[in-house]
Length: 120
Image (cartoon, rainbow, N blue to C red; front, side):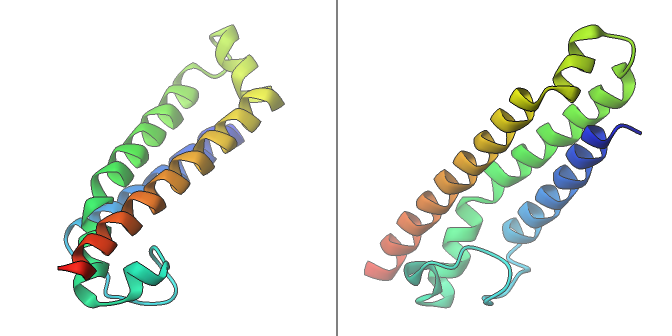
């Protein structure tokens, strides 16, 4: 199993699991897992609203990573562009930068939702 496929599958399953926990409000406020901004941590209502708001993006992100991991597993060694993408440092770096940007955007959105809940 190529390392890229393993990473994509593992991260995808983790993101799916976290998104599902957040959607179902099964993850209580804590200092370990979840968004840790002051607004989100200000109350239980803010915590649950913020995490429910970002649950679907996390689920979609996880599902896309799982699909990408499956594509790499199926076509690795059979399609030249996949071998290039898996071995390319530029593709790997752009993937990592993209993931960080998405996670930052999700955190900002969660913080905005929490602030709205805190004001009401």
